[in-house]
Length: 192
Ligand code: AMP
Image (cartoon, rainbow, N blue to C red; front, side):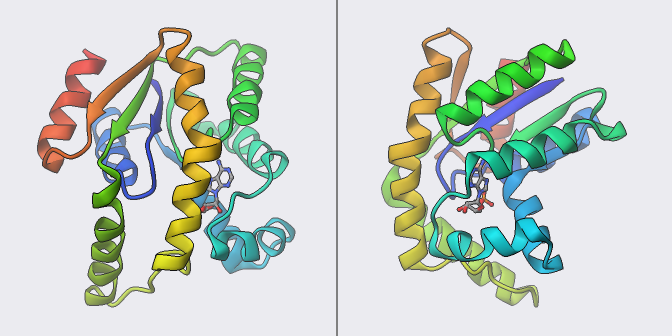
């Protein structure tokens, strides 16, 4: 099973991806998680990505396409994966198409979580509060300023990715405003 989860920041992609990991036994490939790990480890990619991530902007296509290509080659991704946070630009979607064609792989589903824009900031704030309550560290970009930039990046650079896939008839949408369990059920139904 090879899936893409699309949707704005705070749509619930990570939550649903975690469920799909359990269900299908395939890894979640989150470019955001991989980039945060690179920043933490101080790798060359992390050093390049840190400031732009903190501001809420997008890291270059070249960097993210490179890390996804490497990650897809790892053994645990051989039987499938859930892409979370990638592709985020049309150039990334085109690079992914080329990558999959080279590997002789096809996508089984592209699912977009549709969420009311006004709900997103409060979801991000809730995530930050829950992280603090659990004793964790709040993401550097889970604050109102960076969030605004992230939402703008989504509208300008990522919304066209949905159009890219819907133009080919491969995009399916789910109401991401529904309770988590219902969103999960709707996704299960789409995947058959
Ligand atoms: P996320 O965890 O998906 O919200 O991603 C956090 C941040 O990582 C984003 O705001 C971007 O700065 C960066 N990022 C993650 N995925 C991508 C991507 N596919 N393309 C460009 N930047 C990305």
